[in-house]
Length: 252
Image (tube, rainbow, N blue to C red; front, side, top):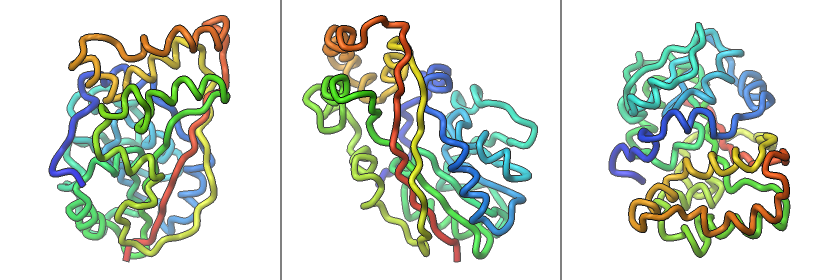
């Protein structure tokens, strides 16, 4: 549990908005089917609004909040998305006003007790909370074996990841979740990237930034030669996938 707002991404907000995976339409369609009312959705720690965009197709209005001014500044604009600057633990929302609360790839940074207090305060009775994360990307066994050296338990960046990232590696199964859980289907994010796009994505990792700050060199350089050989033409696109680990529950 974090003791306060941990800002790992503001310095690269623009890159984050274009280099992070998007979520499948089926995820938001599912969330709409299990949410009794569809007047207001609150997407916490929205970043640039990747999840908010998906919600906006199914809910009348979306409040997309973040504690980072830079992230909000680079948010994807939609008519029914209202970007707000406040932390998830101190929601500037009315009591019992929200139909669904979502957190995409961010819950592990929160102060759980304070956040869940806010969820129960602003959430409507029988509303929904859904939280999800995605783990290391997958391409093929040969490339994965090399890039896994940069993972949370990898030899290169293992000690440079924040301790909270363990919850992501554990697929959110060990994270505190005091709600009546509902069963959820499996979801996967899929993109088709060339090698340059893969590097751009990996450069947004907080561990890469920390490694560079301490060692004055890019840790990706330690795997680039081998990955380039395995990839072939750098402009060729390959399927990149992420398993989405989701938990959803009913707000009482």
